[in-house]
Length: 95
Length: 396
Image (cartoon, rainbow over all chains, first blue to last red; front, side, top):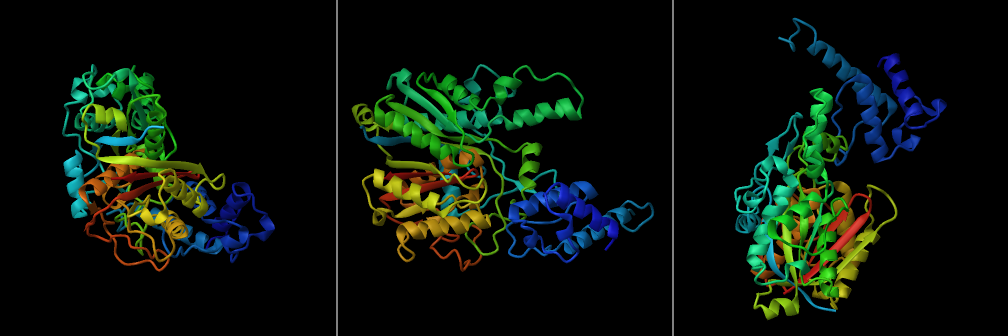
């Protein structure tokens, strides 16, 4: 994943969720940061806003696959890439 | 204190524009049609007003009423007609109007904000204030039918309709009024409100499957459900048949979490509603659940029912939100109507869209098919965001 993406997500966790920077690593579980289910939905909202993407999450699903900071960063990179491809003139998605 | 009986019911929901259509939907366990929204994958349930008898008489055209008021007047008109309440049968200064809604006027606000901020049109509609006041639902019911008793709305989010019926019953019981038309009305399907709900990630992308394994949340909806509540002696004096008796009402607050419901708070109101009717838990034959289809509500409500009734002795439970969708503040009114009809018509409505049991939700949820039963006593539950709990106990 991109270092830039990780840093932006880390900033969201610090500024919006009040977490300490030194406790946020790529493999840190969001649960270990004290982020419960509703904190998670709010966190996803800020991430979507920052990257202008839509992350597919349902609070009622048995298993939410985005468990670590790295999971979120990887999902963001994938969605940002898909979005840029969709907007590239002449690409398969745009055609 | 006076006994309180139900002498009229009225309803409008998606899949049921009046009482008979509504009950046919319940009896057949029909989930109905969903309407796509502007958001990909998102859908809602929309009611269709087919009976213009009541709103057609109002001194304004459709643009003068928020949709929530149109739904409220339509359902209240049906309930008052069934009850036979008019200036000839009742002193209309002693008829109350108590309507629950979470945010009536939301559709109007959405439209006006779009004009201001999206269309850059600086002028608001001159009736924007009158339409967006949440109390306009109650005012329009009062105006439509000439009801001059206490008239107000109650807001307790998704428990609003249940609180409204319970408080209205207390007005009748205490002698402050003889009759009340009470219930819930909500029309929250403007794009702004839908997007706000979507951001909580609790809307189901397919169907609403309360208590079922694989449930993914709720389907937003609209509608209204109203009861006419009447002092027993007043109904008897004018020879009006009683459809059911409202035996007990209880409400409480968790004073805890805004979103996560409390098993104790839910159990408390069920126990108190039963006790206030002078009954015991073994007397309850059926529970019309809040049953939103979210993980948190359905699991907590199941645990609360088991705490009250015992794990192996709970009566059958169903959630009609599987068919009507979640009409927020309207839902308590609509579900009270369903509970009264279940008692009077001897059929427990099912939980539609149920696919398989969730090991943690292990009660009898009347899956898929309505069940005939001779019922004497039934509870109707509502549990709202903000930790607001309410339960009504009806008997026949």
